[in-house]
Length: 86
Image (cartoon, rainbow, N blue to C red; front, side):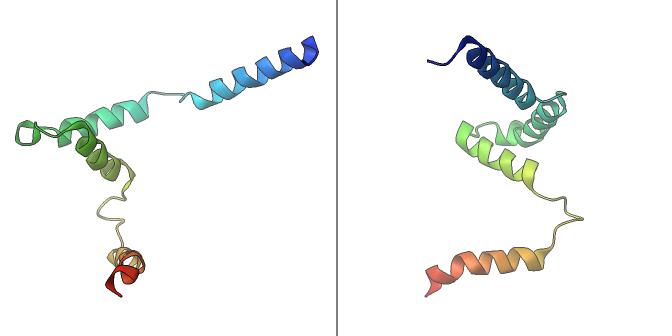
């Protein structure tokens, strides 16, 4: 077992890690809830949690339509699908 100073230093570093892991604002949460509200409407009210999670992940991590480069997406898809087509 380490000395008392080592244990205290470890505790301080753990506290710093926890503090740095917390987001400084709630913007990301609010953005996520806004996206969920748009995705899970009356027409899609029966989305299960797993599917809703997948659709939200695409919504939150994908570029906007103005930034989307279809050529890049096609190249990426071809790399993934090429082994399956052989």
